[in-house]
Image 1 (cartoon, rainbow, N blue to C red):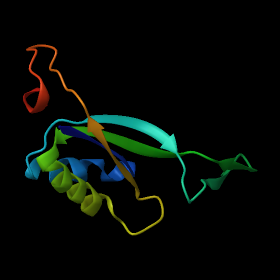
Image 2 (image 1 turned 60 degrees about the vertical axis):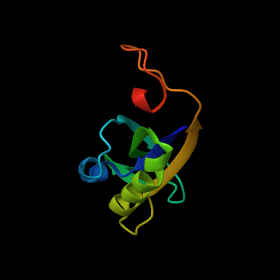
Image 3 (image 1 turned 90 degrees about the horizontal axis):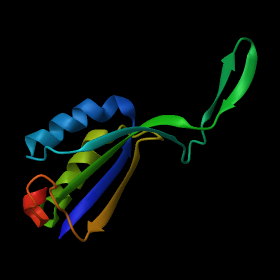
Image 4 (image 1 turned 30 degrees about the vertical axis):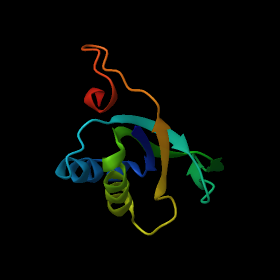
Length: 113
């Protein structure tokens, strides 16, 4: 079985995480620019003299599908690399993937990832 690892991180950590994952042999990922908030609840900003609330902060979402054997190492690498120790470092979610198919070749399972 494969695992889907979804990490929501601070955007400036993306390149560092990408390099750390390449060093452990994980290469394929999907990246999305997203917005959200957690405990920090956004912040207040000033625009043309008017104060307004910024509810959603820019984040980057990384999605990686790996074999079950690689999952813990990938999770540990993301966690260690993304951590700044400050609010807003992000979250990691792990899902079971019941099937993976490479469209071009028809390969399935670990061969597809």
